[in-house]
Amino acid sequence: MTDQATARFNMIEQQIRTWEVLDPQVLATLNNMPREAFVPEAYRGLAFADIEIPLAHGQQMLSPKVEGRFLQALQLQAKDKVLLVGAGSGYLAALMAQHCAQVTALEIFPELCAQATQSLTKQGIQNVQVIELDGHNGYESQAPYDAIVFTASSPVEPEGVRYQLSIGGRLLIVLGQAPVMQATLIQRLAEHSYKQDVLFETSLAEMQNAPQAQVFSF
Image (cartoon, rainbow, N blue to C red; front, top):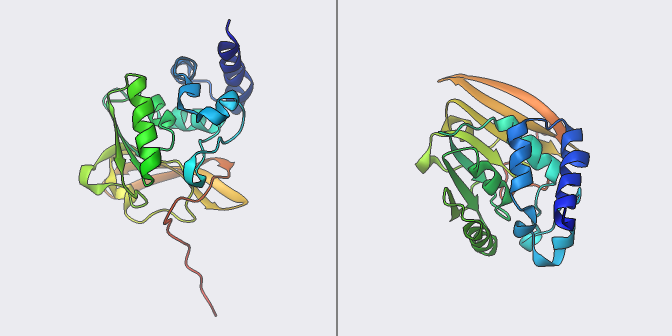
C-alpha cells in the first residue's frame, strides 16, 4: 500500500467511520476519489488530515468527516439533480457526482471557479457544471433540485431557497453563529410541507452575503 493509500485508509477508518459515516457506497466513493488531487499544492501533505484546508480568498475545504456526513445525509439517487453552493476546490462536487445525474456548483470567486473546473476535468468528471455566481439565494433558473447543499454557514436560512427543491428534495445547510452552529437537513414533503432535522453541531465560515438574523431593539 502506498503512503497516500495508507493515509486515505486511515482517514476513512479513524475520522469518517468514527463520525457515524457507515454507508458502504459513501465510504467507497471517499476511498476511490483522490482527495489530494483537489488540494492546493502547498497543502497536499495535509490532504487526509482532520482539518479544513485553506483555499484562496480565505475559503476552506470542509474537513473529511463533514464531507462524509454531508454525502451520507443527502442519500443521493442516480437520477438526482443537485445544486452545490460554494464549489471551493471541487472535491465535494466530485463526490456527489458519483451518486447523481447532475451537479450545478456555484462559486463566487473566479479563481476558485477555474481551479475547481480544472480539477474536475482532470478527473474526467463530466456531470458537474461550475458556474461563477453568488449563490447565497440558490439558483432559481435551473430549479427544481433534488438536493441543495451549502458548503458555508448562514446565520439564518436563506429566504426562498427551500422552494427550489423538488417534492422529496433535501436542503443541507449549517445554520447559526459561532460557537453554536447546526448542520440542518430540510426535506420538502409536499408543496407546502417541510420537515427539518438537526444532524450534528459543527462550525463553518459564514458564506459571502449571507442573510443576517434580525436584531430587535426595545
